Length: 190
Image (cartoon, helix red, strand yellow):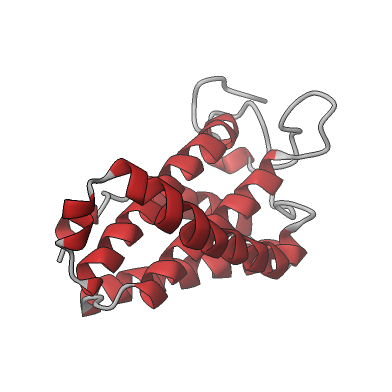
């Protein structure tokens, strides 16, 4: 029974969110490598030098420059996440789909696959910030570490779904929490 237009938490059957969930470590590693390459060769060498005047860039201290680059990484990642996850989340929450629904007709990619990949992108964005910035406030650090652990725990629980009765539910809640989070970029500018 589907009640169209209403949230259907009670109807989300507990299931492996995606067949690629057991490979989340591999996905995380590839995502981290891709982000490193983008930062090193696209952001630092092409995008930032073309988008900003040399005067602005030269006036930044090393710490400010790292913060500046990090803001671009975070903004780009958040835009990408919004594009990737908006449809799967809405489709699943409104009851028109499950994590096993195919993303497009004839595609073997499921909505759950997209959510696993985006959870790894989200994690890498925060890990990048923790390693790359030279100053991270204790509150920001606690927030990032918490977000990383919660996200990865949700993925792990979705793999162990027969023993975790709320795994899929918690995985979806992580996404809502991740997307509804106010963007802390303004507060973090050093």
